[in-house]
Length: 213
Image (cartoon, rainbow, N blue to C red; front, top):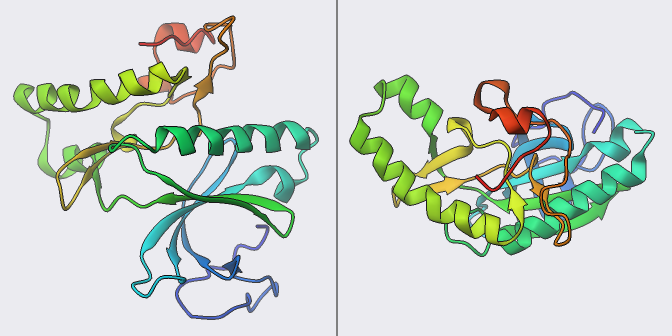
């Protein structure tokens, strides 16, 4: 977690620089960093347990790696994210949770990899979307949001980057629930943390008052 050496698909079982094991639970290998968030680092990985070595998404908790003061809180949030993903991943347009475990005192979750382009890439490559395209996106994604809200979860980071069009089926997937909020049954819209991407954050969310919208 603290070693910046690029691991790659070299087949090594240990990092040549820091000596750490590169194969998580003797199965998952991180290939490249995709992004960093509040809770952890996201990697593109492969599952070496299967003959086809399919791609997967590996999320590593930052709490233990960085020696965060509020360690327990960070672990609880990461665990809560895994619980969310296990339930929400039952929807055919949300990546499924494949595994959740602790290795070398660091928590990891493994998610299904969606092969395709996100909508930001689509716009950058093909230009502004037509109105008919936007209607199709809304018709595809609004039922997904309804499902998420029924499970008392608010995504809080919906943006083109987090909507992927699967290459094989052309189906849209909502990804990255790292900023999601699980609401309470007794106080569903209690004021919370200000989080999200500034250019896509609704005014009420910017005040810590995200709603089912």
